Every structure is written in structure tokens, then in C-alpha cells.
Length: 387
Image (cartoon, rainbow, N blue to C red; front, side):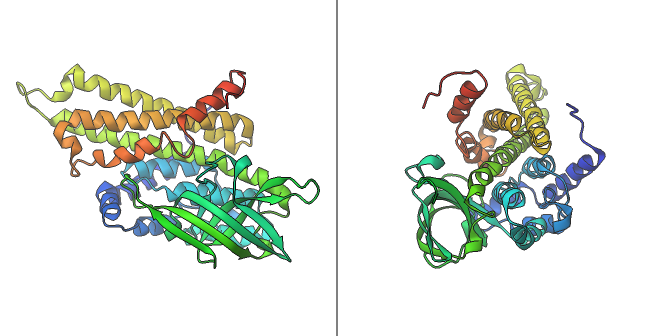
């Protein structure tokens, strides 16, 4: 595997880094604390083409893949602006529609993904079932040519910013009578769809919601794909990009924290005119965290390259490993940065404690570290399923 980026990818990284630093972590924190959204950054990134790097050129995108989108996610996070909506809209929803939507759906939605004018969030998780699609309680049933959706979803990010939500429901297979997953594009203002904001101990401009679907009526073309047979492949199509881009965002956050701490420890002098970073008790933990972040970045790159090559099974393994490694590395990096800065590390001004909630959540969502270890044990080590 070639670990070097192409010249075009290098240019993308430099350009996104410059955009992220133009706004910076202070902008991100101010939006989060005042209940605002990073609309200005999102819109500028859309105008510059960064939000649509993974969208095919014929629909107005950059013609790249998840490798390019992971670069965008990482570099914005490395500038202190981790944008969760990059994961749910361009990575998950756009990938699902591009790979498994009808041509009419691609023409309708992909240009908006490409320029950032369209935001589509993703709803699979439920209060009882979690993300286990075998036990989802949200059901879609036919009513003439229409569909009626009923159920509940939880921890759905950014619904208040989006025009649509991609809902995973279960439908009855006419041939077998069994329930099978299907995906529906639901307008966020659809009658019967209501939401309730969840109060989270995470500093983020993106909000989390409970969703309630009460006989939400949808036209036939709200179903993603040509038939119900598209449901399961469409669902899985979004999982690898989700894990890869979440991992990239975590790696960028880890880089940001280490950079902030390194700048501080290299210049902070307390005893005898030497910087505190000259002491191994300070330097070694930061160096260890930097190693872990870099190892995670390598696995993220491998997963993205495999995915873009169409090697989905291998990308599934690498994507899960990348998500695990990045979640652990980001949490370690932020915690280590806070410790290195001492009391300053807990202030808003120094901009590292503001990320503690987000990186802790990265060890839980969108798939927990324990479920990833279950996956690796079963699919890599050949162990019996444990759950």
C-alpha cells in the first residue's frame, strides 16, 4: 500500500487546513456555547467543493472517494473544527444514495450534497434496539402507493439543520412475510414527524434528538433504491464510510490537542529557565499520544483506500480497526494535553478541555469499542459469536 497522498490529495489537505484555521477552535466553541451552528464554515466549504469531494463529477462533485472526504474531516478537526455533519450527510447519506439510490434519486439529491446546500441526517438507532437492525421497532407499511412509517429513533444528529433524514425501518417481505430493512428519505418537516432535543454533556454545535414517527406518509419514491431488495446493501453501504470518517475526525482532534499542548510545553518555563517540555514526565506522555494518533491515521488511510478500491469486506475490518484506534488515540491525546497544561488545560482559552466530551463519545459512537472488539474476535480471530 502506498502511504503517500497524490499531489491532488496533498493540495486538498493544505487547502482544507487553511480553511479550518481561518475559522479555528474559538469559532467552533462560540457556536456551540451560544446554541449556534457552524453554518458559515459549512457554506464556505461547500462553495469551495470540499463537501462534495466524494460525489461523482456528473452530479457536481469532485469525483473522489472516501479517502478525500476523510482528508476533509481530519483537517477541519485538526484546526479545532470537527464537523459531525460531514459524517452523517456526505459520508453516510450521500454514499447510500449514490451507490443504491435510483437514477432519479441521484439526480435529485447528489448535486445538493456536492455543493453543501443539502443536509441529510441518518436515523438508525432506537431506544430499545440500539443499532441492531434485526430488532428495529420502526416499521414501514404500504398504504396504496404510499408508505406509512411509525416508530422512534434516538441520538439523531443535526436534525434541526437538515432538510431530510434517512430513516432505517423494517418492511414486510411479500414473498416470505419476514421483516427486512429498508431506507426512506423523509423530509424533516413531514406531518407526523416530531423531535425532542436531548441535553448532552458534549460541547458541540450539532444537537442530538429523539425522533417520533407517527404514521408519517411518504410517496413511493421515498424508498431508497428500485425495490426493497436494495435495503440491506444500502444500509451496509453507509457503515464503512461512517466509521472511516469518524475515525478521521478523531485523528484530527488528536492532532489538534497534541499541537496545542506541544506549543505550550515548549514555551512554558517554571524551573531554572527550562521549558516544562524538556522533562520526560511531560514529554513522554505527549510523544506516546502522538505515536498512537499516527498509528490510527495509518489504519484510517488503509481503510479508505480499501473502500475506494471496492474491497468492502477488507474495508469493513480495517474501518472498524481504524475507528477503534482513533477513538482510543483521540481520547488519550486530549486527556494528555489537559494534563500537560495543568490548570490552563481546564480553561476555555487554551481549547483542549472543550473537546473532552466529544472524544469520550468517540469511544462509544457510532459503534462502541466493545462491539468492535466483538467484530474483530469473530471475523478476524475466528472466535464464536459472543452476543
